[in-house]
Image (cartoon, rainbow over all chains, first blue to last red; front, side, top):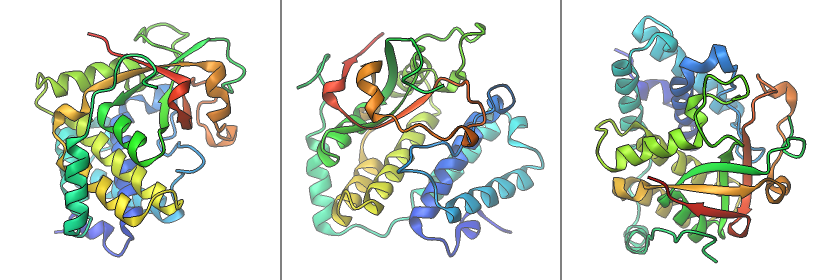
Length: 122
Length: 165
């Protein structure tokens, strides 16, 4: 049986990642499309998705709605959360294992995370 | 309507503590944010032109609930984790960060605790935001009347941070 992983097979990580992001937006905003006519691909000029990422997003939407047998606008809260969890699961595994240096540096950055003060934080 | 043409003096945006820290450490303290002149959630008003999912106070409260574990479905936090990774991917493509920095951000986005997604409310003077707003061509916008704006590379000097609730 075809899975989300199969739909993204052959795509670059950056396009798969972008497609999952816009797919999530599509699912999140499904209730509001008619009323607000939002474009779920809307982004700033630097972040606009590639043609490949857009094509893959539409493939993922077709896959999910095909599996569910209904449009995302008809998803219940449980169905929405179930698909969001499935997306997280696959997206989380896109990257190769990071090097020891990267892991150590990132762990140190996590230690330094801080809650900004109120105001300008200059 | 373009950001320079609206009359509201203040814009609002909700951000997570982790996104704020990553912008500060890896992106030269330049911030990417969606903002709107509407703070509240008066969805019945005909003047309120953004959906509930785009209301800063709604986003803030949803994140706060998830962080405080009042909500067991952390879909907003997971969405934010993916957004941070997507942002790093864009910055790498643009040549603004190295592969190592990208990999670090990806690792951080996966390993940080939900508490690091505590929301912050950004209050921005519209006039200070205008230079950091790239208007999307109207033909690309399904609803040209929607008052939502994306700011890129906004310096910390252009906004205040507050916390509510």
